[in-house]
Image 1 (cartoon, rainbow, N blue to C red):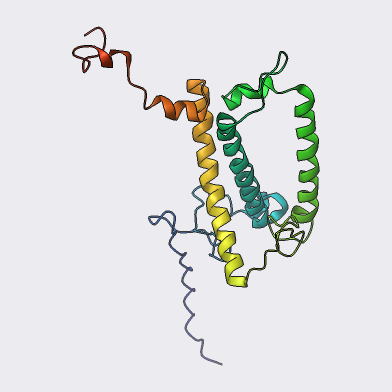
Image 2 (image 1 turned 45 degrees about the vertical axis):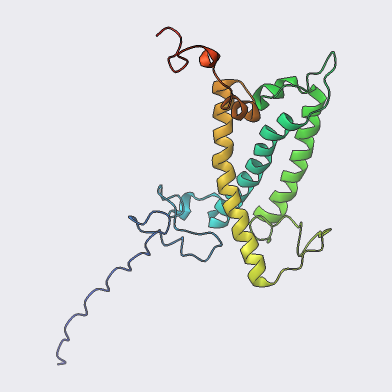
Length: 216
């Protein structure tokens, strides 16, 4: 009768990598640093349970992050640029509204319809190529490797650097557009108006004892 060997100890659990974004936590196994811009930020654990993940792929989350970030960059420009230049107003259309939130109600109705059709067409293309198709997240066929009117020809290292720059700009723009959105709600003014007002001297500046506000 063979002698029973000693049972092998159970393997130690694999320790996760410390999150670069939140050093006091551990990055989930799904965020292993293989994606450009992956810093292990997932405090809600959305990337850990693939059973409830849309399309059962973390690619969908990266696609959503890029899409929201690109829209946020355009939206931030939309908040700022009308304060610099806008079409002249007429009797029926007020193009001089500097608060972007109020300007939506001043845009001609058919202008909003044109925007909806244009955005819908872009979204249909993105869904077909990036979500249901085989393209990488965010690759809608524009730029290097697709429709390339500016003739971009980056090396692999340069291309990855551009991807990192884009994802950083996307994340910053999403925070920035939240800032101008809330300021537009609270102040009812355009972004440049708000900045310019910070340099206006108060009315009591020209009075004797101007360092005391009125009523004191």
